[in-house]
Length: 211
Length: 298
Image (cartoon, rainbow over all chains, first blue to last red; front, side):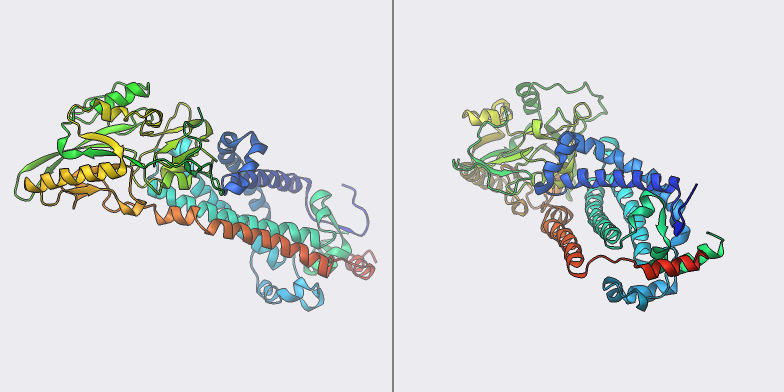
């Protein structure tokens, strides 16, 4: 594919499609889930055709998410291994938030914040899957005891809150760091963006002959 | 019929404001005197009859209990327990199981659908099935394991305490049908007094632990039992000794949720404030230049 000069390829078309499919399903899950989370949010069930439809669709969307997220996990897992420089980066979170990037260690393909998003999403989704199955009354109502269902409900709600929090961080980071969104919409970032935020990755790409 | 007593609603599921409660009615109760019950199942038949429900023809497994559990059609069930006492004599205990109509109903607390479960000021806890979304949260909320999800329409059903009959001044169908007056119905105060007389009688006859089952852990119930062995309710087919809404359900449906929502809202607000105070994190021409040079394009 033709790539303009001064840009670096970051996401393949397959990765982008996978990411956005996952994003759409996750947002639909959050909206339908939140409609049953608290009475103040029940109106969200209207987006799905009412409470009954929200209840019917939510678990099936969850099953779909497992597949889309598995795709993302397989694609990005190897880039999200925690390194010592990630801990250093995280310890200087004040510099991160103040955009004093010169005080931070050189970052590879992903920074510590992105890696945390990746792993918290992974763990959260696994907890939601396991607890969601236990709570799925129409499919597994007879399989689990009432006490197991209660425990699952607490885990499901807790993991959902964590994931929505992680999603807010993910979304804000993409908005705040200009030039990020195009990585997921066009697949490329500018060389300046890569230099400033992911210098180690840029050097690696350059060494691979990524011109 | 969404509700027959729409002005005297004490609690309305998944609603944070006060429901229509201008009219107050006297608290009612059904009293089941286990010592008078002969296990004839007239109450079970009357329940199906009045509510116009049919139970599937079951299988006899050499045991009186039939059906073998509460179902979406059988909202009440005679449970038979054979208990061998320490002195060797056998007690055949029969308990009419069904919704206890808790004053603090766990089902209603757990329900996420506005108005799918209501509690009238007379104490009756009623499922308004057209508002039910079929999630089964009430099953998790109930300390007595009563609601049953129908696989036919994915709605949850349980005893209504014949709220439709009570609304027009009639006793529940089961009480009407009971041939030994083991089931009585009236104001909660009257039923408590009536129970006291029955308990005094039972004590006189040697049942020194006779007592009223009106568990305070759920705020008292609007279905009460007179038990010969009130010190051991569990021998009556696992009637819980100190039922209360599970602390898991309290955690799930209590204060942590609004706190969590506020926390998420605060996160979004902080993000916004960070943006408007610090501005975006941008790259400049110098970065682009250095980037290009690294790529060997400079």
